[in-house]
Length: 184
Image 1 (cartoon, rainbow, N blue to C red):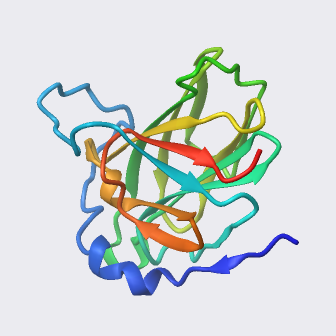
Image 2: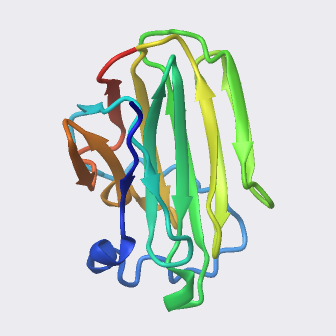
C-alpha cells in the first residue's frame, strides 16, 4: 500500500531563511573546483513508494523520491512568497553503476532546462518561484542514483530532502549524495 507522508515546509523554514536572495539572470553555474560541499560521497536509503506533499513558494528544497520499478522523481521548491526571489537550481543526476536512463520526463517546466548528457547522466537547471519544477527519471529497478545539487551557484546539499528508513531527512551529508531504494 502506497503511503504519502505530508511535509510542511514551514517546519524547515529555519533552514531556508535567506536561501534564495539572488538575482542571477542565467541558471547555469560555472564549475567552481573550490566548492567543498560535504566531503566523501555518502549513500542513503530512499523508501520505495513514499512521497512528499509540497507547498510551492513557502520553503526551499530539492526532494528525492523513489516510486518503484526504477522510477525516481526529483522536485524543487523555493521560498519566493517570503523573499520575493527565485531559486536557481543546477542539479546533476547520474547512475554510478552504469545502468542506463531509459526515460526522462519534465514536470512543471517553464524556463527550465532538462537534458541528458549521456546514457547515465541528466542535467536539470531550474528557475523555481511559486511553483514546483522537476522531472521523472526511469532506470533499472533498484539502481542507485547520485544527486549533485547547487542552489544559486553554491552548495545546495543542505536543502535536499528524502524519506528513508521511515523518517524524513533534511540536508544531505555530502554533495553528491547517492540514493539506494529500499526495494526495486
